[in-house]
Each structure stands twice: as C-alpha cells, then as structure tokens.
Image (cartoon, rainbow, N blue to C red; front, side, top):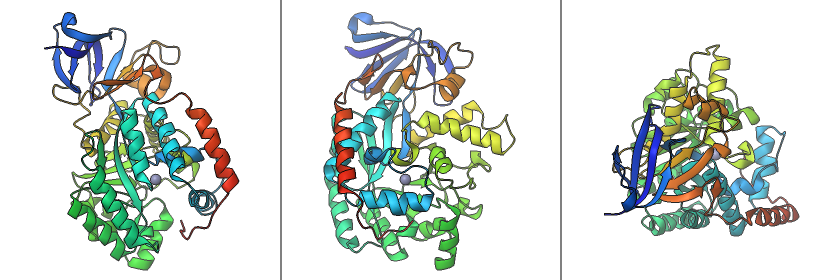
Length: 431
Ligand SMILES: [Zn+2]
C-alpha cells in the first residue's frame, strides 16, 4: 500500500468550523483514506508538512457564469436594466464559442487561485465550459441555459438534452443539469417542459428566481403567482434544485424549499446593481443559503470568501446586530455548497473526496492568528491559499496555479479586442 499524499501534522478546520490540531491526512486515488496520529512517510509519494498551516474542505461557488469573465469591467456604473438590456445581452448576442472557452479558463484559474474546488455554472455553449473543466482538474456542475420564450426554444431544448446525455458520464468531476434561465424568461408551458425534460434525464435544475422586487410584482400581475410558486407548480422543487439569488423570496415562498433545494447568494452583485435588500437576511438561518459569485461581469471577482464576507457585513449592518451572522454560521454557509453537488466532498473524513485547501495565515494580511475563521472570512485573500487539491491532484502548489496556462492574460486581451470590434447585437430579451 502506497499513499499519494500525506498532509502531515495539519491543523484542521472542519465543515462546521471546529478546529483540531496535529492531524495526519492520507490521500490515495482521490480520496481521504486515513486520518490518524501515525506517520508512514516511507510509503507516501508526497509529504506536505502542514504544521504551520490550516487544512479545510475546498470552497464551492454555487452560482456563476464562467464565460462572462471576458466581460469583466465592460458595463460599470449603470442600473440593472441598462446592465442587462443595453450592455451585457447585446454584447453576448455576438459571443463566439472560443470566447466562452477562454472566459471559462480565466474564471477557473481565478477560482482555483481562490481555493474553489467545485462550482455550479449556468451558460450557453456549455460544452466548451465542460472542456475547460476537464482540462483544468476542477469539479463543476454545468447547467446549459435555456430561454423559454426564445423562437428556437424547441431546437435549443433538444440540443441541450443531447449535450446533457453526452456529458453525463464522461467524468466524475463533471455533473450536468438543466438550466431554465428564470421564471420571467420562461412562460409556464416552456418552464414545465424544461423541468419535465430534467426529470426524464434524471438530472436537477439550476435557475434564477426572484432577483428583484419588480420580478415578483410582475409575476403576481401576469400569473397571479410569485416566481417561486411558478417554479413549484412546474415541478421544479421535485428534483435537485439550485436557486440563484432568491433575494426577494416571500415568507410564504419558504414552504416550497426542501432538502434538495439550495439558494446561492451573491451579495456583491446585489450591491453593485442595487437589487435591494430583499428578504434573505431575515431569519437567514432558516434558509438553505450557499455562496455564489454570479459572473465577473457583475461581481468582477469569483471569490466565495468575499461574497460570504459581504453577506455577514450586510447582515450585521442592516439588522443592527453585530453579534449575529457569526463566523461559524458564515463558514457553514460556505461549506453548504458541497451538499448541493454530487461530488462526495466537503468533509475531512475518511472516504470523502480529497478536495482540500491548505491555508497559510502566517502572512501580513492575516497574522496574528487568534481565530482562524476570522482570518479566512475577514482577512484572507488568494495569497493565503497555498494549495488547492481536487480529487487528490494538486491544482495550486505553493501559491502557483499549475493546471491553467500562464498565457491566458494575452488570450483575454485578444478576446476583449474582438468583442469591442464586433460591438453589440440585437437581443429580444428584456430584464
Ligand atoms: Zn446569474
């Protein structure tokens, strides 16, 4: 028996924020195989001395649009209507498959750097995102976007169905599900069709719901139901479901949530586009909240810690409650994303996937270390992520992301020049 990696004398922060010291973690064939006091260095291929470091489960980004890294900074200081209708969607309408691929690689590199071991994506040309996932070693749950009111709806649904069938079993690091865009872009019949197709394929769904007050008001006006009610009526909560935002969930909507529903919140985008406070800070411990980043076009960074930090700060500030939104609850919100994804990850226990981060807090931005959770949530940045390990493979080693090309920055400048040269196209979507 030979082990692949030994994390020796590690300080551990587990999924609940509990800390233990001097632990040896053995990794073999992608799994955590032993957690013990014993040291077998002679039968381990790589030994990493973690006596000065902390080891945690990896981070999850439960809602993003990775290809949109190519639009980072293109639409600033505008309101949400203009952001969607006159900037992002017109540019997107001329996007190429190569843009999608380069944007995904850039996003994945940034996420690996920030300690993300798995993410959930929602975009079109999703097969190119899958390519980037397979190449870089990260894990991902990919939902190809379907707009329910577009003229080529049936054609898109068939295309997406074929893609899901094709990608479903190609890698244990990849999961696929249906991505109806949102209730406001899917009338009842197409919303139901997409969800029924997800059921037939035995996959889940990932969709935007109740992002702002206006969406709830218009839904009530047109359908007499909230967006959550419409998703429920269409059968969306019968299957694994990732809700992006759910910011304006009503008290009554909460009854639709179940053990297979997770809500990915992205406060940086809400603040930037002034989407309002909504209701997710009210009795938030009763909601299945996880951390997402949304795209780099609205959040500019793909850093779950930054989003969790903002979630805690907004809660403390607006509720006049500095002793609420406490570190261990924020940490659990960061870790909950693992439960939403089928990757057997998120716990430092035997037989769990070796999806781990090694943190160095003995740096100027985080030292001294009285409270390691405070170091992570309030002080850390990517420089503290020393190693990022997925399925026992080291994606970031000693502070360097090893699995994505260094030339990506040049590729991104080329793509952004092309995007500006092509300009904006027509779009029949309305936010
Ligand atoms: Zn989104």
